[in-house]
Length: 119
Length: 438
Image 1 (tube, rainbow over the protein chains, first blue to last red):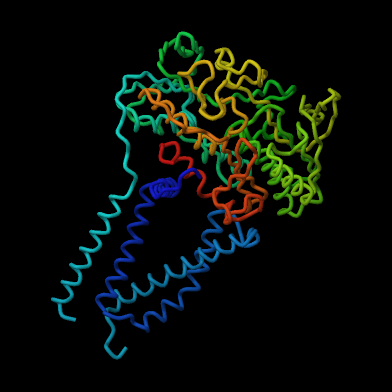
Image 2: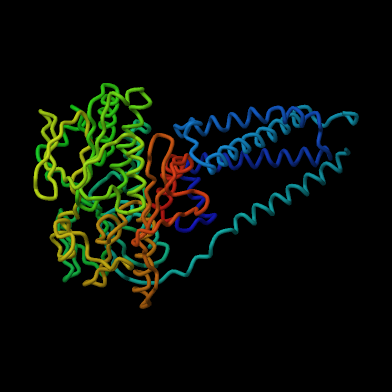
């Protein structure tokens, strides 16, 4: 890579997914994040009950993200060739885990509304 | 929570989000002011180099008359050919339309060039159109000299164990069909490369590795024998990479024959004939092969007087300074991409580094200025060693490894992350480059 600027990265992502899909995904990700922050501010606290379900979903998100990436790239666990590959794999898993946790938490909060004070 | 609190919180939050969006919109480097000029610039070739340069020049020049000459309606993403020939992508993966990548304000002359007269500053197309220029950038790519392989015809590709990955997307797909059959049926696979300079010198090696990998996946590796016949004494131009490839070939059970150049193919007898350094012929039978012909500058370049007179005389690459890519005898002529007569750099990644150099020198020259921008020979090759793994090899004129991610992605290790880059990020980066954005 000659110069890896933010602008280059955006251009590369646009080409990777197509401009429409990429920005649609950015908007969806932003909306979910906004909704998450919104329910946190609205409820003024984390609901541990909602968070529990969100946490339980994390392994699923992690596994799904890894399998998705492997499927899209015609590769598998046997292709892990060095430490950096393990880091990438864990990174993909972590992103999937955090993503689904936020999604599950937000969905519960939006559907069920704020919890009763006693939890 | 009261509705009052709720509203104020939401309004406050939306304000915050809006501010963040504004901030994001302002990100991005400031553009230098455009240079006003009436210069007539002719770019020969709308491949990776010509297209990327055209897109960058329109952002730098105001009023320039830029003409790009290319008779091919299709644009080919050539780094994808190996993936097509490995059955991982369909043949249209590499195909788009030349015209779709070109910016507004650039005139496309959809014809091949017939003649270049650098004394008269004139390019003439096959249709007879005369294009006078103030500056000429030659970027026509190279010619695959299929006729130089005796007994071979492109119509043979896909049958009787004959492949030709370089010939184009459709031929790459036919090569996959032949390789798929071979790795099921078994036999002897013979791979080689030409003795000339060539684009992506890693590609013949990749395809050898991929054939080995498919045979293993099918459980048929013991049914096939693989040999690589190499024209020089080293398997790769960069010594440290050549050693690594030698070790990997040993590991995979791939035999080698050194200093052997292909002369002819006999498709009926299934025999390949090579010639050694002493001119002695050696025959080998084969059940599968990937024919890669000698590569040369296009005929129009070789007839133009722009080629080196004392180097690569059988190939005709354009005589340019290897750091500035400016012609040694005609200072208003540049070469970029495969046609440039420089020791390395016949890959798309090299183009990405060469184009800004030519752009800077051309713009500086138009502005009556000079620049120190130089091309260091950067060449990159994600050397696939099996489906799912590659080595991200990057090097320069001096055979130094120049890793983009030192300490993170080891260049001589077979890694999944390097494969991910080839599979996912490379075409996107390439397309961004075509648009002048990378």
